[in-house]
Image (cartoon, rainbow, N blue to C red; front, side):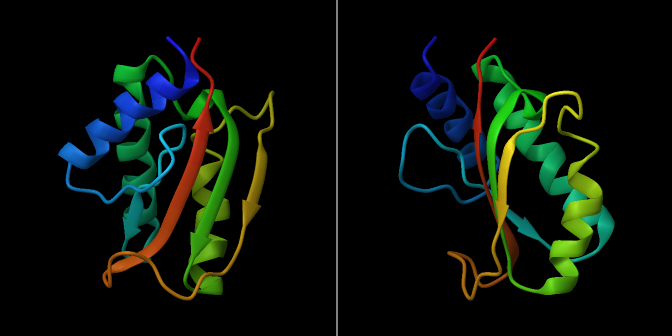
Length: 117
């Protein structure tokens, strides 16, 4: 399975779960709702679960881009995301404060590219 197919399969899973995704078929862009640690953890758990049908997980993330709306949310994301990424194989990552997301209720967006094993 190519990386593009893997992300497409995961994208469908996330869309079926009710999260918003966009654009590029090689990337998955779900949204997080809420600013509490439990809300952020839930968003990462859902993303990890959505990657399963494509044969990958957040542990195999090559690139991670996160778009929080506030600094406090970005600090919470930094804390929680380490539970899901492979610490032995760090991924390329950016985190940029963002002004708006596709959903008015969203507190952050995640854009990941994961390797299919």
